[in-house]
Length: 504
Image (tube, rainbow, N blue to C red):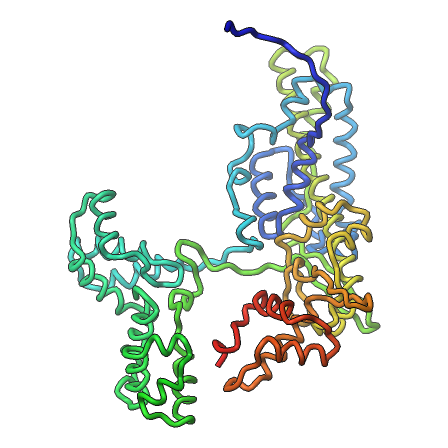
């Protein structure tokens, strides 16, 4: 059957975001630490954008308003820029050039990076610390190793997981070394190098499983020759299965322990670290992350909440007066300009337009974030005044959207990756959002309030006889939370609380 080329016509409606809207959305999602770097990059890329010379510019934003005196200069400059940027002078070529974020070739590299926001809820400022890999490598350089041993140990260090353990088998690592590095080795040779690696700090690093990790820590303990440590070593070495399943009744029978002696051993064994790599405060290949609050909420002497926005190192921005002057001169002599002059005029107008759009996007971000934070503070006012988690009321994105007049998606972007500092700690904005549990009488109870009561019950229980889910349900019902046992089990799992037999 012969093929034919058929041309059809269809009518459809699509929604396309303008470059300015895309820019506003991206800036809104950024925490203050990322915004600082974004502004620095924009200042380097666009000569028409510069910092305001007003040294009295405020670094903070109070109550949704920026200090007028601090921003008069930038407002006046922007107004002047608008006079030269009327639609009459925006040719099709210029409008197309303005779409600087419309294609991958023009988007700056820092915007193309995948930050993995779906996998990690927060993006935070990086501290000037040394990575876990670098710390391990530094310890390796203190040893007297042959070039071959150093090569093998470097590969072993790079194969460690974030918890400091080596989860890959030595046979698999030997195969990888031969395939990817052209180095032939054996399991025995790798194990000899691994034993030297296991002498590094923190104790337990380089272990191949939890049992070996705990034994390495006990061997490195200065008190390893005491009777207490000898008993602990015997428990981990010969009764590890009973230990991991909390079968202390069997351990007591086998070792002839009293109840007090078993309690002492349990208390001391809990001090061992099953994830020694985390003791260094870092994940492999990444620097330590420090939270930079985007907001601060404090109660004044009259009991009123004061919301402050942290501008961080983001300066006041304005359109460069020198670019405006060049534009004014070129525009006044437009009829006498040659081809090169018209290209210069188009370039100048393009840069000014980008600078003006970026400044407006930063202002819009500040206004939107302050509106969202103020709404959260108003809705969760009892918590911000007293810091009691049980005072948190049920709140969803729609509640904030209705109060601010913003779209739900805008509220979600504004609340993501943002933190607020209070008198009772620093919290992510997403933490204040929680569903409600509706009782048979129609009363709404915040889920977080029920979870807080559940946590208190577990913390107050007798660890020798931990409470079952049924007993926890009865206690919560007695406190005025009429929930079912399966709901208790669900909330317990969300809080990371193990079942009763594992809490002994």
